[in-house]
Length: 49
Image (tube, rainbow, N blue to C red; front, side, top):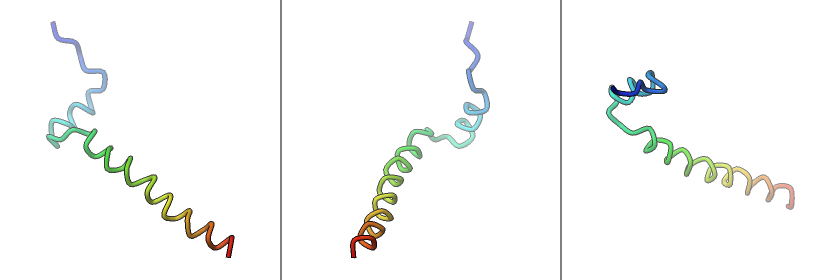
């Protein structure tokens, strides 16, 4: 007997899109610290100058 999926809506979305959600997550995980650093650096420069 097969085990029912824990999150059926996620399985349905993955079947329709035919992509692994981890691929999109890796892009976000890389972009978030980069954009945060890009915004923080000019802020500190403004305070120091």
